[in-house]
Length: 311
Ligand SMILES: Nc1ncnc2c1ncn2[C@@H]1O[C@H](COP(=O)(O)OP(=O)(O)O)[C@@H](O)[C@H]1O
Ligand SMILES: [Mg+2]
Image (cartoon, rainbow, N blue to C red):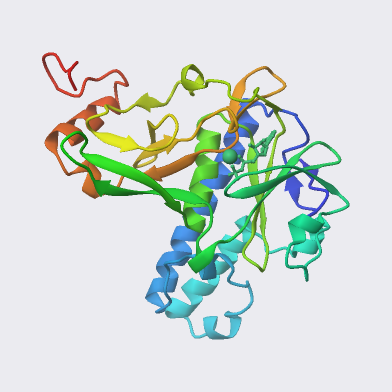
C-alpha cells in the first residue's frame, strides 16, 4: 500500500486506479470496522454517562484524554479503549495538513495550493489532488449533524410511509460510505476527522456523466424497486438494499452521483440512505411479509399469492 500524500497513512486510492476485488473487499471491511468501533464507543460512553446523540463529541474524542481515569478500570477503561480503537480507524488531523488555512471563516473558499476544487453539493466539497485522487470534505452542520439521511412518517390513503431527507449523524455518513462500497461503487476511504468536525474522505476519480443523463435504467443491479403503496421518498430513484442486519432505503443515484470508472463500469460516488426503522418494517404484515420475501427473491411480489399489479 502506498502512503497518502497528505496524512502519510497507508492508502489504497490513487487517481483513477480501480481496485481489484480483494482490495475492494478489504476496504469495505475497513468501513464496517469503523462503524463497529463507533458503536462500541457509543455503548461505552452511554455507560459512563455521556450523551451519544448527536454523535459528534464521540467522533472527536481525543485519544489521550481519559488515560488517567482509565487506570480506575471499569467503564472508564472500556471508554478509553473504545476511543483508542475508533481513533485507529479515524485519525484526527488538522485541516492545514491539506493546505487549507485553519483560521479562516471560509477555508474551502480560500482554497489549498495542493488541491483543485472540482465540485460541491449539499453535503461535501470535492477537490482533486496532483495524483488525480478526489478528496471530499464533509462539513458539520447545526446541532452536531453532518451529511444526510431520511426520516420516516406515516403517509395517507395512497401510501403507507413517506421518507423525507434530513440531516444525518456521523454514523449515517460512515454508513453511506460503506453502502457505496457494498454497491460496488467508487473505492472510498475515510482518511481523517479534523478538530472542527470535518470528515475527510478520499475517492477514486471517475468521469462524470453528461448533464441531465437519465440514470433510471442504470441503477446498481442489487437495488430493488419499492412498491409505490408502501413507501414514497421525494428523491430520485428510491430503492431497497439489504446489507448486514438492515434493510436500507437508498436514493439519489442521479447523474451527478454516478461516474464512469477507468474500467468502463458505472459507479456510485454518493447517495442518500437510511435503514428502515422497525416502526416501518413492523407496521403492517403486508409490508413485513414482502420485505422478508424480497430479501431472498428480489422479484417477490407484494402479495404472497394472486395478482398484485394494482399495488
Ligand atoms: N469520485 C469522483 N469522481 C469524479 N467527480 C467527483 C467524484 N466525487 C465527487 N465528484 C464531483 O463532485 C460533486 C460533489 O460530490 P458528492 O460526493 O456528490 O458530494 P455531495 O454529497 O455534496 O453531493 C459530484 O457531483 C461530482 O461532480
Ligand atoms: Mg452528490
